[in-house]
Amino acid sequence: MPACDDTTAPTNTPAPEPEASTSPSREARRPSGPRPLFLGTYTSVEGGGKGIGLATYDAATGRITGTGTITGVGDPSYLALHPDRRTLYAVDERDDGAVTAVRPADGKVLGSRSTGGAAPCHLSVHPGGRWLLSANYGSGSVAVHPIDASGALGERTDLVRHTSPPPGPGQEGPHAHQFVTSPDGGHVLAVDLGTDTVYTYRLDEKAGTLTEVAQARTRPGAGPRHLTFHPGGRYAYLANEVDDTVAVCSYDKASGRVTVGEAQSTGTGSGTSYPAQILVTANGRYAYLANRGHNSLTRYAVEADGARLRLLDTVPVGGDFPRQIAFSPEGTLLFAANQKSSTVTVFHVDEANGELRRAGESFPSPVAVCALPL
Image (tube, rainbow, N blue to C red; front, side):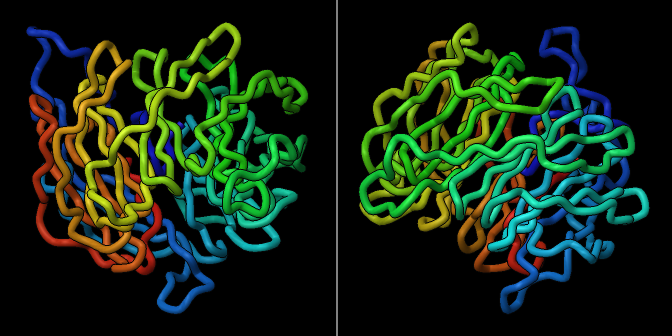
């Protein structure tokens, strides 16, 4: 299910073919013509947007062109697309948190539902397309909502607050920051910055309820923010916001248990880098980390079938405070939403060596906190 950390190609876009000597190049497979781009923002802050930003981009050059705004959606700081590509979902990151369904074809808002918590900052659609998962940062809870045949949301079916273990050093409570489905579809995982824990749940796909099956602790004070799986499904990479590190994690699909490995450098020096998010290329060979405080992207080589990250370099992001990054469906472009500079920067991704090369000028986008290219 495409989201701001998109890993799935949308409809109307051919999915990338398997890499092989007889396959056409990615250049040949790249669709022509303008492609949709959705932009998340904060509407309640000075200089913020008016709703979900609408734009298109050129898949060859990365050039972005603004086309409008979907209004009637408050503080849509994170976005996710339904697997059938007909409905877009947004968080309403306010004290009285909500999630909203929107029909991109005509911009119609299909309605909102309470998340039962404060400041939801992440959401994702379960692969079956029947459940929306959201994380309430402010209240440290995760929520589940049903999705009907039209894409609209029903009343919440579950809400779980992270009451155990107790908050980590410097934290006053739990802060759920991400809620995603494992690649095998067997579990859903919640990353909590406040409790230094990754929670694993089973989702009852008939009732929409959660059962906790495992917890994985990071080192105290790590402040885990975002978990990204390797395409092989056995390993994942954790961005730790508070202690400026990343960690390789192993995942056991039978039990759902995550094991957090040793903390590793972000390559940003002694300053505070506030790691935000990791992306992994579809071929599983390279990973990229957005560093908000350092205004950079760290490039890693992924080795040992996903079990190891080797730091290669960092490159300037060309903006201020890169909150979120996303690949185009073919993986040839990387988009960075830069919150404080209110810009989106785009990079060409070299498939052979993973190097990043700027693609033209930055695109102005009010308080850019999410970019979802289709």
